[in-house]
Image 1 (cartoon, rainbow, N blue to C red):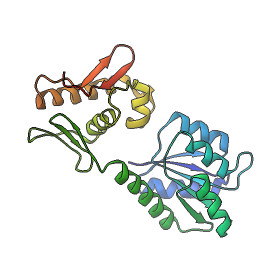
Image 2: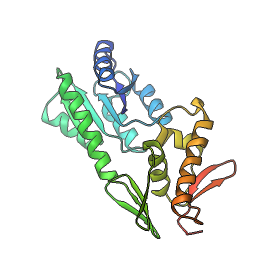
Image 3: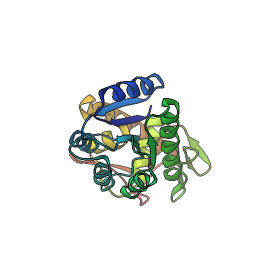
Length: 227
């Protein structure tokens, strides 16, 4: 399920877009002004943002530039102004796409889906290697000495995220925000249980090697060294 943030001060547009995307299985959050949009981005992880250009207060281009300081999430601009200059301004601000109003809901969803998939393909095309351990981000496989271990989608995402940032400690809140994509108050226990399964599967696959370390009162980190 992809998480999408809709930012628009027109309640009719928000309601229409939300209903259509919900019907297709997206998890939708909304903001009707720039300040609330920036707060949402700082407190949750999104797969894409649909951003209106012309809003009171902080305009869409400024919001986009602020988001780009902290995130590479795909941003699709919506605007009644579809002139070439406006599209260029959107791209310069860091936007990924620009859709003029009025627009087709089918086209909007297609653009969202394509931008999300394009970003995932860029991020997930490599194979991470740690000694004989291979984490294939494209095939979503974990291999060791020719053996393959089965991980659920969430287990793999947690392992891949940690392995992409070896040596860095991530708190429960950060893992919820960047991987789990749900508020941490949904239950730290769920995170601990899932991480325990990841560690157990890794240790069965790579006997005697402990790649994931619990850092007391701080979180987890992936150890690059074979220990």
